[in-house]
Length: 266
Image 1 (tube, rainbow, N blue to C red):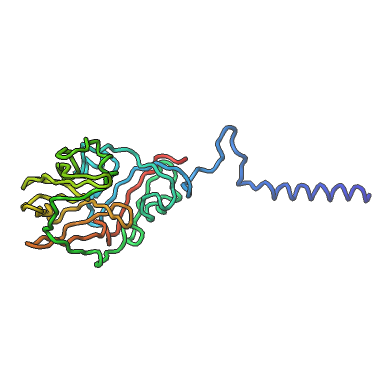
Image 2 (cartoon, rainbow, N blue to C red):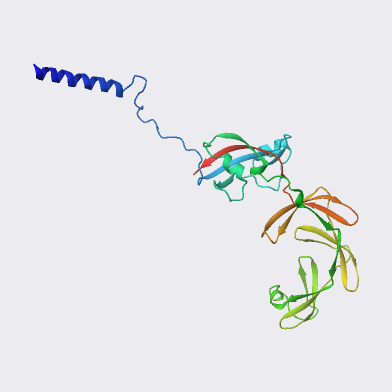
């Protein structure tokens, strides 16, 4: 009798826990159905995206989508419109807000990312407004190291003429260590130096008067030798003697809106 009661008790416990372990609303997976979790973007992933950068006034400022570029009137026939591919990590040349904004996206997903200035191109810094003279004097003769001259693929002899990034020069004199160059710059000749267009306004026996040939309201890309990187400058104003440059990024102080499509995740 006791044995029979024990068997009945065990059977009852088995049935009870069997029912608890298999609720009626949970069904086993269907044969052949993929039950893995869908991949979402995490730090360290390699991704490819399509984007459109929109300013708060609704203007499309930049995009890597050819159709969006044509539709918004900013299409450039010289530009190649390709997906933006990058590793999701900070310090890869993209603003922090953009990198953070794609975290959690799924392949094929779309997202609008709003980025404040602090995580975009920074707040506007009035200390980055600088004034430079509109004109400056450049010496007609310049001494350079002979080691540099030997890299210019020129025959080293007096009156030998070759092209530099600002115009023609000739070798005026040289020693084993240095060479004196004479600049052959006609009045009106134009050149670019450090990204800024310039023009020869006048010349004398020993020097040239150089004028910055800049346009008010235009952006230029120069090189910051101290930081070792490129920087943007915008011409704020030009008067008879000076040029006011703004070294803030053109989008500094602005909230940015990115429409992003996640094309692929690895």
